[in-house]
Amino acid sequence: MYDYLIVGAGLYGAVFAQQKRAQGARCLVIDRRNHIAGNIFSEKVAGIEVHRYGPHIFHTDKKNVWDYVNRFARFNHFRYSPVACYKGELYNLPFNMNTFVRMWHIHTPKEARDIIERQVAGAGIAQPRNLEEQAISLVGTDVYEKLIKGYTQKQWGRPCRELPAFIIKRLPVRMTFDNNYFNHPYQGIPGEGYTEMVASMLDGTEVRLGVDFLEQREALSGLAEKTVYTGTIDSYFGYRFGQLQYRSLRFETEILDLPNYQGVAGMNFTDAEIPYTRIIEHKHFTFGEGNPEKTVITREYPQSWSPGAEPYYPIGDEVNHQLYKKYRELADRETDTIFGGRLGSYRYMDMDQVIAQAMEDAR
Ligand code: UDP
Image 1 (cartoon, protein in one colour):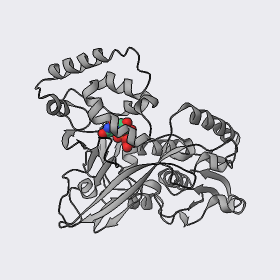
Image 2: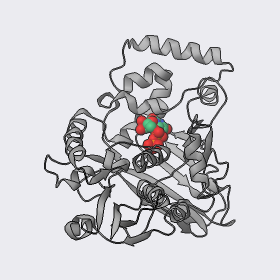
Image 3: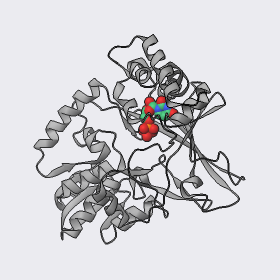
Image 4: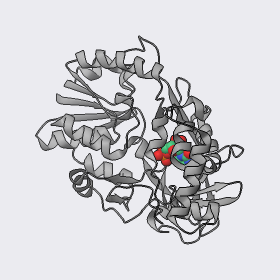
């Protein structure tokens, strides 16, 4: 009946379906949840668009991906410039001259560089072997102690010395007064929300919600020539080599009778004592649109993951990497199934990477 059964109505599944439909293929998209858009799902709360599974800021350096998403949504000019709160002291992120001026009461890039160099030399790290050493060699001990250590340990549930260095390489360090979190030239938020964008991608494609592929596997895969699986790769193979691990999150959302709570979309709490990593104030993604009297905030609590909980961040350690490789080998031998997206690839991916992967796979 169908050419493709696409398991998962998230970003990967929606882009894949859209591309294939444009080529004339018949697609059926199913999702276990009762909504489309996966973890970029957003919906109105008190008139304000709320990112239900954590904030998603679109950014890319790929012109074709930017042109592609603009066919399905109108993007605003939002730039992510979060603020860090360390025991009541506020600092701009990512690490830049605004951060250093506030931290050391200095004025010039040279002064900032000198301080960082002295601290790096004092720490005596030749070749960074873990996240702590990597962070100190990039920004010195003060920034590490106040803005990285507590946040990272909360986020990952492990001391920085036991975490891989690559996690911190995502963050830019700049000797200019520039609070833009991302270096990419194309950035923004879809004004009508991510759910609308995904709905527009899926326009004309049959979507069945509340359908669990693994519960009715035979019947469902019998409907199509090929399957596209965007769930966790180990679940597809019945966890035969053991379970891949994740870091999970819990969100606490509140509607406040205030026009403006924190003045910024993202406030990171970087000390170890406050149990949440950040507070998102959603209305700032759309410059206050939606409700002039109220605001909606979400506190984000990192959680350990156990089977059945929502998987968010793949764990980038060697044990999980080796396990993934075994599942990948099985997946590569599966000629009628394509595995894609963050869970199918067991990789922390930005939205533009997911879109590029889906476009490539569809080609
Ligand atoms: N990070 C930090 N302090 C911050 C923000 C981020 O130490 O205030 C570190 C932390 O280790 C985190 C990594 O930088 O895991 C990547 O942060 P990013 O904001 O890219 O994470 P996301 O939430 O987007 O995955």
